[in-house]
Image (tube, rainbow, N blue to C red):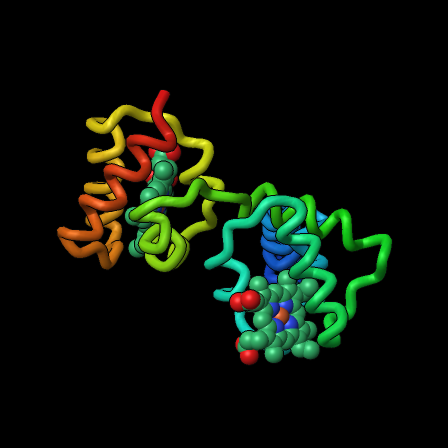
Length: 156
Ligand code: HEC
Ligand code: HEC
């Protein structure tokens, strides 16, 4: 009886170890993301970051301003954080449709998904249809504005 209980304990422990190992693999975080999580989520959620699309200069300004506000970022970490922000929350060209992208498309994923994709209007319409199926709250009017915006700015 005791033996059986111990055996179950060992099996459970092994299962835990393997789950933990797999978790580590999938959650291989970028250093910049680790800094962001530690320093930037104490006062507000990530929407402030998600809804910005800035270049290096813009993000450097924001990070400096937030440090002045009390964000705890070591100066050596600032370039790492800025580099991360520029890659995942980088600039978008101005124009009608941009606001919708910032507010709607960032609800499920970062902007890198959008910025690295290059398609013609037909390909983009297919993507946007897929996003509607995923549950993106896009009105018909916004759909048309976003389609025009991405087809113009992110064509092959
Ligand atoms: C000490 C609290 C605090 C910390 C930590 C903090 N913020 Fe903020 N942040 C604020 C406040 C306050 C605002 C003003 C808006 C608000 O009240 O939510 C703000 C606004 C922002 C905005 C919007 C700026 C704008 O002009 O619209 C961005 C972007 C931002 N924070 C990014 C960051 C980043 C990146 C970090 C980590 C480096 C960070 N914040 C850490 C307090 C903080
Ligand atoms: C309700 C959640 C949600 C919203 C909102 C959303 N997406 Fe997505 N998006 C997804 C999911 C989930 C995937 C991943 C699908 C996959 O990998 O098959 C994705 C993937 C993508 C991709 C990559 C597709 C590929 O095949 O590489 C692009 C581009 C994209 N989304 C653009 C957008 C745009 C533009 C918007 C705003 C109009 C948007 N998304 C809004 C959920 C969403």
